[in-house]
Amino acid sequence: MDVRHPLSRRRFFGGVAAAVGALGLKPASLLGQVRTEQFTGGEAQYDAFVKIASNENNWGPPPAVMEAMQHAFKYANRYGNPDGGIIQAIAEHHGVKRENVLLTAGSGEVLDVVGTTYLQGGKFVLGADPSYGSVYQHATSIKSDAIKVPLLKDYRQDIPGMILAANRNARDIGFFYLCNPNNPTGVVISAKEVKQVVEGIPKDMPILIDEAYHHYVDDPAYGTSVPYVLEGRPVIVARTFSKIAALAAMRVGYAIAPAEVIQRMRPYTTSASGVNVLAKFAAAASLKDTAGQAEIRRKTIALRNSTSKELEAWGYPVIPSQTNFFMVSLHDKTVQPTIQAFREKNILVGRPFPPMLNHLRVSIGRDEDMAKFLTAFKEIFPKRAPVSSTAAPAQR
Ligand SMILES: Cc1ncc(COP(=O)(O)O)c(C=O)c1O
Picture 1 (tube, helix red, strand yellow):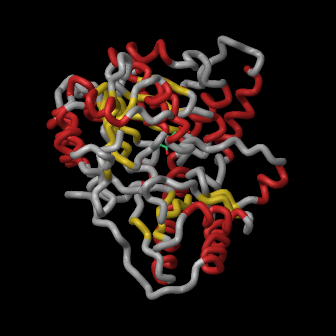
Picture 2 (cartoon, rainbow, N blue to C red):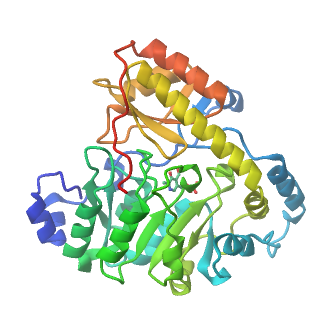
């Protein structure tokens, strides 16, 4: 459900069930594709693409992580293989107990498992729009739906509006979703705003805080939400090894949450013992590689700033991002033909994110990837008067 649609805000807040009945549920197939398509062409074609569509880490796993995977191959024939110390390493990394950790096949599995656990009986997920659509798609797939609160004009999440919606519809809401920083905009929610949510909604309403891009934030107003788990609130923090750790294809992520929340969610994982052994060893090695991760972060932020500056000098505003991707405004041009224009130049850029159909999402690759992207952008789009960025910083 979308609060911009035929429903007035007053009526929307008045009753979720009535609203859903009036609008009809949107089947997942109508919501647009929200997961990355599996590439079906050959390896040579795939390798030749500049891949800046899916917010991956184009530098790839560092040598220590590759070695850890090589080492783990010897367990490829085993069911009861060692876990490479990954659960303990995650617990120590966050200063929590092992019972607060749920290891999953990517953090996407955390998002699905939270949905399956808390949306039963037709409850709603409450979140921003646009945000990471997989959460909403999963809700639809289990015959639930979402209450989506549109972003503000400056692309920040409407925290007061979301708190209001949570309180007005508390009985119908299964969990509150905060993507921080948000995908697809790259905009961060400040620690102060997260606190407003935690303190402003019913104490027993679960909050899923998706910190997939945590490592790329340099705004001091941001802070991780893991401390709320230690306070015993039903807060679930989702993290992934797909981004900073460059392990997207290995499918490994995790949730940090109170022990009783983990126990409630665990039966719904598909991978109770199923995160594969290479992924477990790789993830454990990656957590130790703090210097390598700091270097990826440094290079990504430098390229984020330099690429944004160059696009703005060319006349195309960029939403200030705190992630390894950004959105650039195409003015009156739309994303779909732009994706095709880049593809003809062997460059894969982000998919459309309705309703932001005049914004293109671009992942930050290596220097050579961004150089090719900028050359192609300037061939596709004419120069205009220079502009400055379009969004306000996170609320202090
Ligand atoms: C905000 C957000 N959350 C979760 C995910 C899922 O990532 P993974 O399942 O690879 O950990 C993604 C992937 O792009 C994402 O952007």
